[in-house]
Length: 152
Ligand SMILES: [Mg+2]
Image 1 (cartoon, rainbow, N blue to C red):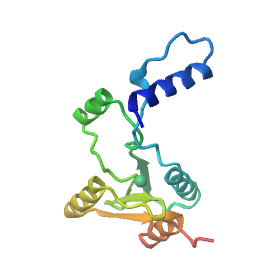
Image 2 (image 1 turned 60 degrees about the vertical axis):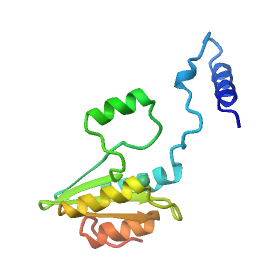
Image 3 (image 1 turned 60 degrees about the horizontal axis):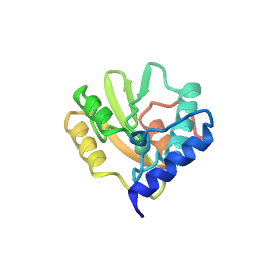
Image 4 (image 1 turned 180 degrees about the horizontal axis):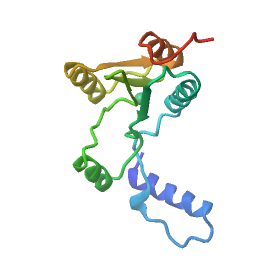
């Protein structure tokens, strides 16, 4: 596939979606970039719903929004601000311990950057791992005492 041609097709499609718009900058059209992994997003949303209803007391969690395409200039700014490629999707603190969980859709491998970050986190004393799919993630969270109760 010709990248320039693909970019022009995406611009034309974007203009069709917004009839009042006169032009569409080609710089804003991501071509050849990996699409955001929607199945991982669905797994993560389900985990957040579990946490909202049955997180163990004194558990704080947050997501680092590293995923998705960034234009090179934006990526450079984020990197200069301390964003680290491969940082796990979910971070937890409970009773003075730090936990990190990288979520993967079933059958999807870790990227080299994700592997490297998990190793660095473990070297620093954190509990860091990855899980394939919702069941594995929930089982890990429960085994670590971050979720109360049994998975139904
Ligand atoms: Mg992930």
